[in-house]
Figure (cartoon, rainbow, N blue to C red):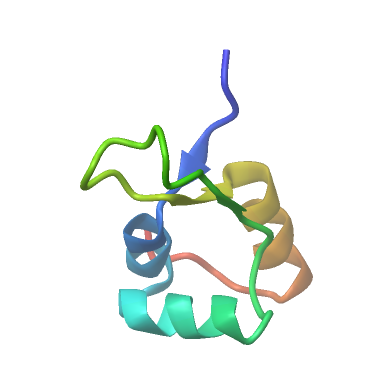
Length: 69
């Protein structure tokens, strides 16, 4: 069984932001912990960046973020 995760698009929708805002935060080292899947072996069109749900929930609690979804 794998841990539940969110993609960048799902996290953006959860927080009411654009995916580009989430990507910008990630590039600046802000936001919840994430994992990047390897380029080789990942089917084309599959989101490579994954945010473990537990990390998202912990980040939301720490930073007093109330999700929209």
